[in-house]
Image (cartoon, rainbow, N blue to C red; front, side, top):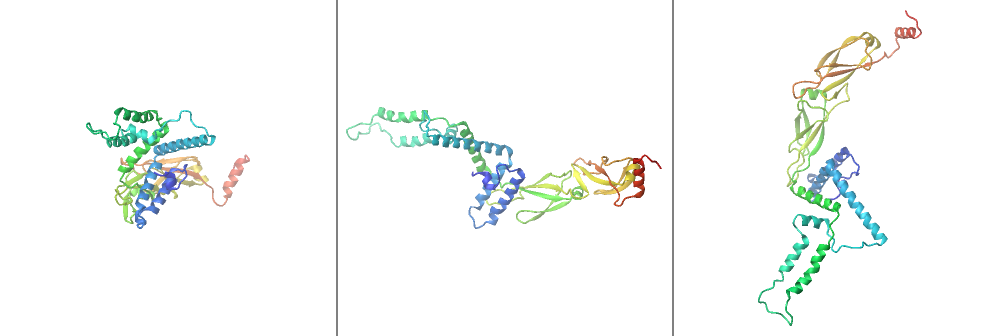
Length: 348
């Protein structure tokens, strides 16, 4: 497979969000449905999917980066030796490549396999007449085969980094052959807190243009994923992929979520903050009465149990009211006189 970073067009230090966005863009651009005149569109789409599957997995991505760095170091070292004009002292004869070593480890030696047909092509019959003045001597054949055997013995073992790279490529090739499913399509579903509480059915448009409604599961929180089986991209000859939908609960209104808790801010004037009061707020799940104790500052929060988002067990999170001390838009003469008299030590 080509360089996955080059396939998706991202930097080598790109984050997961950048890689995901690049995969979406490339998938739309090379999708076979949008490139019906291009016979290589399916292969290009599958190649982009394999690149995304590799880079989205931190373990596989780290392994690939390590193998690539090792290959670059070996290439630079070889160039340095070539520029210096130095040759290794005991240069191996027919150095064994990493792929040959892997083939030998797995029981398939390319050179041995190629040597066997040539030997079989020259059978020696028991009563075959000699041709010319000389007779075929088995000892001579053994002498001719001996240098080949010595050369195979003298072949150097491939470096460990090359062996690792060849093993990864061999395993990767087998996975590619057996992976007949289109990579998952990652999307975001934007919902409100009310949608989560009511477990609403949110409309989602699929890649083929079909519009379906996704039910928000009980206990859903911001950032939770919902997998829609076999609702992703369609590619001829491959199983249809899934849609992985991430819930994004709106946090830009008067209410926001923190896990299963609903958080909001309640402004208080100086009088209510000092003396305390009782007020009613309209929460997403209905009106809630909030009792504010006397001498409550902006660093105080009031937690009302059971007024948050529901969970799968039938319980609910809390409503967290964060107090915010504010002043009137216009100065209050009485409050200013009171504060001035206290600062100057005068009491009315």
